[in-house]
Image (cartoon, rainbow, N blue to C red; front, side, top):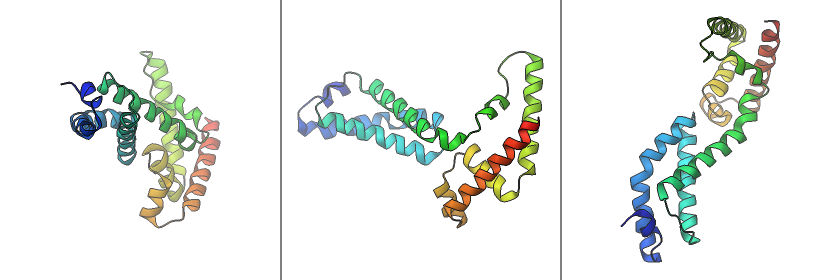
Length: 178
């Protein structure tokens, strides 16, 4: 019996059907989520949200024809929500840095210019005070949350936020020169 049929059976079999789906799809779904979400805790949160939505849909007797496809669609939507929510936090006015990423174009001149920009960014990061650089790298490049950093360092979250804000300001000023 397929998963869609099991989920649509009477309530006594619902828990079994959900458990089967979770067991069968968990690792594949988690791998899919991890490719799009930089932090492992966020990936686990998205996965839990997806399975919560499955339980909720099942309890509301919503028919789900293709359970695996539905799970991946819900995961993709949840990832998009997470990125939208965090985008202002992560980018924090650094949209211009997107131009510094290596070019996917085969044009050697464009690749050279982008490599020069990356060198400028590395130099600008090296010029930051250590505390500001550490917070900027941890949050923007590694995707760590301020709460997580505060717990690890013992620093106040507001202090970490201020350090990142000063780092962003200095990077903007430095990169505008180039």
